[in-house]
Image (cartoon, rainbow, N blue to C red; front, side, top):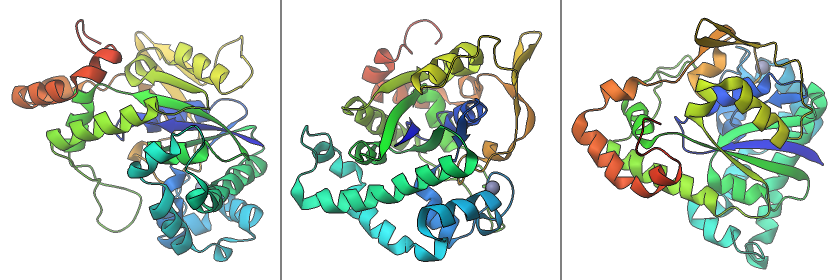
Length: 313
Ligand SMILES: [Zn+2]
């Protein structure tokens, strides 16, 4: 049984940073957002985090052989069809029931999650890691994987201030994942707020697997203690001497990042070498006051739960 740390939460919550940091831990292998591997990797051949096209990356070539006997043995259309049947937000209430989704969908669910189980096991085998980190983020996939016996699933629910998330979804960001002109999806503040509520609330329904809830802001402000918590939660041995890939100059933290083999994710997945680790606070100046009030009002209950109200979080 392969141990998997699944990073969940709404996009633009800092999951790529957390994945890159956790991917530096000894015994861990970070593979990016596997939910997008079928379309963006197998079909589109988008770039791996190492810079090579998906089908030119030695890691993914070997993982495909180990998991399936080669990528040409996988029908991405079949995975997409199964996904549309079982891995959808509207299926979460059924998946969250104590007995699972019921016999009507159990077969499709088992087939769908078996693709992931084989892929996780292959990534572990090819990398030699005991822990595979998947930053797919979607709560519905976590709810599916929770029923897969071949996966020792641990869920890291990463949260970030809704105002920062809404600001980020409003910005135009180019995707360096492909040679085509391509931009990341944008949301209005109201849509971002609704997404933030729905995606985060869905993780509170997850039962039967360990869930660690952590704030992006706390990771960015003090990466070392946050990573120690994450490593312990993921079953990695403690490192009493501290993490050599983390450091600080004056008051600013940095991390030394090696190239990884992430499929899909924020453009930060391509960053290597010494990278500054600090809170991204651009939203405080950049988000207009009316939008800030709107997002605050729409997301108030969970903002309070996560400790973002009152003093500066
Ligand atoms: Zn690669």
